[in-house]
Image 1 (cartoon, rainbow, N blue to C red):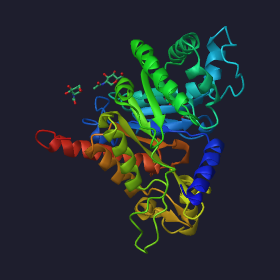
Image 2 (image 1 turned 120 degrees about the horizontal axis):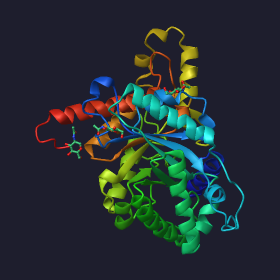
Image 3 (image 1 turned 180 degrees about the horizontal axis):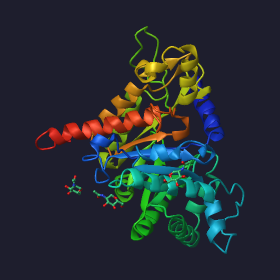
Length: 387
Ligand SMILES: *[C@@H]1O[C@H](CO)[C@@H](O)[C@H](O)[C@H]1NC(C)=O
Ligand SMILES: *[C@@H]1O[C@H](CO)[C@@H](O)[C@H](O)[C@H]1NC(C)=O
Ligand SMILES: *[C@@H]1O[C@H](CO)[C@@H](O)[C@H](O)[C@H]1NC(C)=O
């Protein structure tokens, strides 16, 4: 590994620890005219992560376009503290955070809102355990004995019952050794058995390269592949022949997903991560939310308000920042449906740009949901339904 690459990895590791990773799993349900095909019977997931610090966004409007709302997050310690009278099960008692009853309440309201507006559709609500800077408790948990794991899983079931959740998303960040990774895999298998017995979903968020063995992939319901923060791919270059430094180019994302498939995961288990944030082309440590970038565009072009959507449709770079345009999101969704993937998710809903009257749920989310509906309609028209 070159020194430059090591440096980039180090920078990314630091960023990751500073920015808890929120993933929104948006299950795909799209425009109302697509209700017939894209109802909750359609299995293509459009998921969106909602971090605890984004409670101010319009969650109701996102729910219209989502199949899965991913609440981010709680630490393993906080679960044990909440439900276990033996709260000394983990020696690591720090970092109990971050969701509160207000967050759960907010998402239940969004579920009601969806029911009122789309009575034939459903939204699943899952809660993420862990995330960047929130995973310290995992190590002891997965390498600990059966007793602590049983208590923990039981506490998760109680949490889902109390907060009316549909399942659990695991996100153990900062795995340090092969031993920890193997213990995590074993833990996921055990947790799958118990959560499925209670009719709860289990998903796992993984980085490109954290390839799952076939058996574990089969046991979990979905694998959320975080196809962003990736090393720039050397190919292809931009039109001006500069290397494409986008941290989530579709080429890198495809390569990452195809690795998972080659390693034995069925495509239908894989959910493709789409970032709603930009990184600077020369300094990947500089990050901006898509909403901030769009706000800048709106300031610079105050005459485009009539048709903002069309104007920004293909813009994927602004002021040195590289990101997915709505067109790029559509291309990713089309790839995901053609490959027979399980779905896509957006990280994260609060970074997307919600625009009253234009894209109340968020520009990128709505683009993704519309692309899903569109591809489902097309596939419905094809005799034999090859997709
Ligand atoms: C709903 O899903 C089931 C199971 O996958 C399938 O058999 C059925 O045809 C689907 N119905 C519609 C209306 O798509
Ligand atoms: C979201 O929708 C629910 C159900 O209609 C409603 O009770 C709640 O007030 C809405 N939230 C906001 C912020 O509008
Ligand atoms: C969708 O989900 C809701 C809530 O679970 C259920 O009432 C409805 O029957 C489902 N619709 C279909 C078409 O499966």
